[in-house]
Each structure stands twice: as structure tokens, then as C-alpha cells.
Length: 227
Image (cartoon, rainbow, N blue to C red; front, side):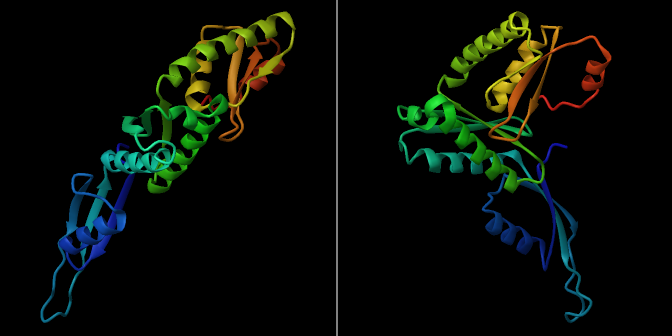
């Protein structure tokens, strides 16, 4: 499924349907495709008239523009010169890159401000779509710096599992891209298993020792959402 929203609209004519649709959705030509299912008919003397039917598919360009406008409106309160560039990594993942001198205020302490912006942006875009989408906000080189920190956090967690003898370690809440990075790193360690629990923006990763007894096999049979 490459589209995020598909509509079937009826009206007196194809032209009227498209005109009303563009106004209601604040959408521009080129941001949607349409297929005329039925051109409709005015009928004889207005009798036996048949409505036109149009199937409309909203394209990713619409969601990229709307997300860019949404993020820009928020960050402009911190610094009107902050630039916002939005692109889609795939049909269901949208990335907004922000740059400027004021991004530090947006990131906030421990990235909490950035996390809040990302959470709000995800909610906003999902309200426009029929399909669940993910929004990632990248501020300057913050993601790269966080990557280095995540690698240290994982290393410390693994040392704790080994030295302290605990069965599992619960990490602090993280962004979606950070959790995915944790899972990716841990794929190289066959003696542990990781999974995410909780709801955004408090979702966190649990790293658990891979036991060999039957009780672990039962736990392993559970379905984990590693996002």
C-alpha cells in the first residue's frame, strides 16, 4: 500500500468534486491523483440525474508540505530563522530536519523538547492519514551525538547484566530512532534479547539475559514490538 489516504467522493460534476476537495483539504494540484469512476449525468430535463463519482488518492507531497508547515509554525516561536526540510524515508516514515542557531532551545534538556515536538508532529500527521505514520525530528547533528551516547548506554547495560548478575535492565525512555538503534546494536549479542514496552513518549527498551530454561522459551514466544 503506497498511499496514505484514499477517498471516494460524489458530487454534481467532476470539476465540482475536485474544487470542493482542494478547498476542504487545503491541498494543491500535484499533491493528489484522481480516477473518475463515473462522470455522472444531468438527465433529461433534470430527471434521472446521476452524480459523478471520483476516487482520490492523496500523495506523500501533501503530507510533506503539511508537516513542514506545522513544524515551521512551532519552531518559529523560538527562532524565525530556523530552517525546516521535510522528506519521507518511505511511505510511512517522515523526517523533518531543522537547522539554525535556536535549535538548542527546541532540543531542550536531555532532548525532551525535541521529543515533545516529535510526538506532537506524529499526532498531527496521523490525523491527516488513514495509515499509521512515524515522524522523526532531526535537529542539527543531535541524532549523531545521541547515537554515540546510545552506544555507551548499551555497553554499560551489558556490563551490568554480566557483572551484577541481574536478569534484565530497563533503559530510560527514548525516541523511536534511539530504540531501534539499541535493538540493532544488540543483534550482535546472542546472549541477550531486547524489546520495547510502554507508550509514547515514555516507551523504553528492556534488555534481558537470554536464559536457556523453559521459562525463557515461554517468554520468547511472546510477540515484541521492537520499535
